[in-house]
Image (cartoon, rainbow, N blue to C red; front, side):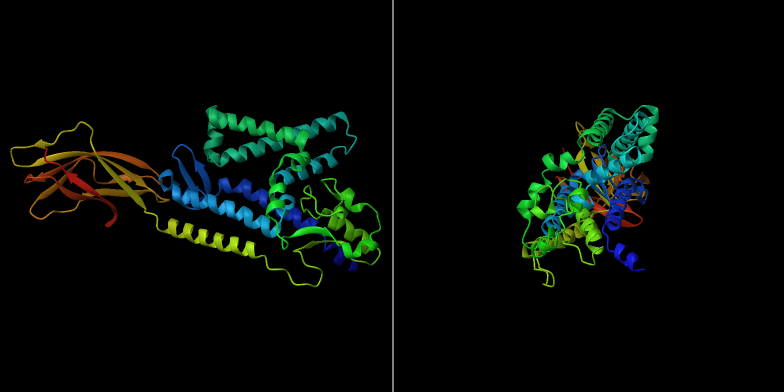
Length: 407
């Protein structure tokens, strides 16, 4: 029982659990749907971001900008508060490297046979294909992706993206791996610029350096090949493997480990208040509230109108006048809808819409162009403004001015 309690203090199971959860979420999100639409997907064809039940079109760029700002400030907030924990616990590159190490250990270790080397590369190829497909799924819904792939109609942009990502990930697994984190990835350098005294770091307790056995377990366990005893280093990804290794060695001697996570405080001291992180957290909260308000206040449908090009105003013997228009409708809801177009009444005049203005069926996130005419009787002596309304189930969803010309 005592040994089980000691083992329960290891970070490895927690880190692996976080990596598996994050990986499964990345794989599952393209398959999840709300109201028949993807949970999160950028539909390039319709220039629409499907975002947790909302459909944000390019016309709503301000909402997309808020999303980008949330990601940027969120990145800074997590870095300033938790340092490089992202690298060791959540980064896809680290997860891929850990998977490659796991497969290598089960396929011959350091001296694999020829068939084991072949099996390794087959596993790299399979993992690369999965990563490449998963990326494209965030732009093409998985059912549509598989249909197009089988039919050979995946398209040049998606096809080039698929092949490029596949090759890059395979070369990464076969040749690069942790070298990318050490020499290419800019995140570690950015982290050094944004970290504060209260940023979470993995450190060797200098007050207990005399208790170190110089066993080298921490160095051997480090995937980056560094020595935590040398102090803060840009290559450290805060994965905690050295912490587990040190604890395991020291517990055999009845002592606690010499490596720990710290928010810049000594053991027993309270955590220092990171004011910059709190400020960033407040900015993130405001941005999230602004996004929630913007999404909640979005119109269920939109209506745009313009005069038909080249169409002249028509006058008829009965004293009526006809104008011609082109109307653009958009259903922004997550479900299909039935819409109608109506013109607001004007005192003393008969207003009649001519064209397909009733029972307009629009699927979720669908656009539709409608050509129609407005007949006004008696004809006005000068130009006037009416109002065109988009109606569904007795509710006016959108309205736009309807200018009536006399010549």
